[in-house]
Length: 408
Ligand code: CTP
Image (tube, rainbow, N blue to C red; front, side, top):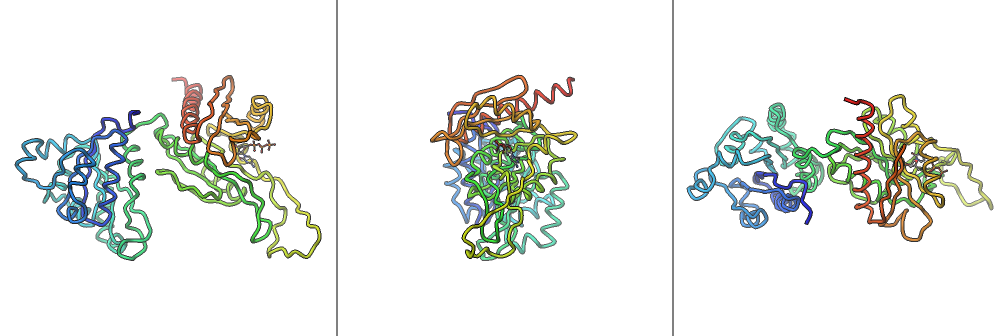
């Protein structure tokens, strides 16, 4: 088994009452999977929703609820427990717990621990949307955030009570990423990354488009891999069927021009740009405003060039570290390196297309990575594995360039 990202880190997971308490069980499992030690403290209300036995089995530690429980206090006193933690996370945090924390109450074990803990405190609120929007809750949350408490979520969507709106607990995978982000300083911690992924669709008329067969898998896997190295990642995505990687912010676009606009408005705030999208090189010159009827025997479609997004990023006065892809059918290194120089890229990841089982729409790929004065061959592997290897090379080259620019 490989050591997880949270190997040896100590998480005190507070669970308060709410239907979302079951998601804390999954979070416990994920945390353990990343190597974290987890101790769970439940409020009395939480025990109405999930049995302490569930958390005991998943965390491998006894679950505590009572402030004055002689058996547990003898093993590890509550102050000791508060000091033990590297991070306290309350998920779900009910409106009641948020209010009690905001006012510094210590009327049960969980709130007492929060006052006694010196480590970072995070809350992941979950409640009815009306309760979340209430001025009292908003004031309490603002008060907590003002004190440095990390407030993660809530997400918007359908609620157990039938309402729709803000108040859903963030998904366990998302919470895991937040915890990793708060506790781990990966090689790209604090680095702002913009990634493009997926195909673009260029309208012919309101119902038809010129597109391509990119699935977006490589770009999404790379966004996730860069995130796992600690980067703050924004993913500008053409239409795909893929879920947003946990911890990644996603901006949806359809056309190349929309993608260019989404990139242009964010690129000044990024340190690293990765152009992974299969941007359509051409778009219909004049999309028809209404559906084209099949009256004519022949139909000619005039296409005009789209802007090259990655090249325009690399051509900026102070460009971010710019990574592009190159898909070639022959003379891979020669053509990809020519593309790197022509577009002014810091690094190009090249793959051979036309082979039967790699590249577009396939789950496996192989890459040759080229930069000024060096190269690396990443052997054929499933895209998520390859993405992690590529992310590591990108991180290394990113730092090599930063060090060369600023040799302190
Ligand atoms: N790219 C882009 N904007 C475009 C076209 C491509 O940002 N309008 C980026 C892709 O995201 C990728 C690289 O350029 O990083 C891909 O280039 P590729 O499609 O291999 O080559 P082209 O530049 O399109 O040139 P050609 O098709 O002639 O090989």
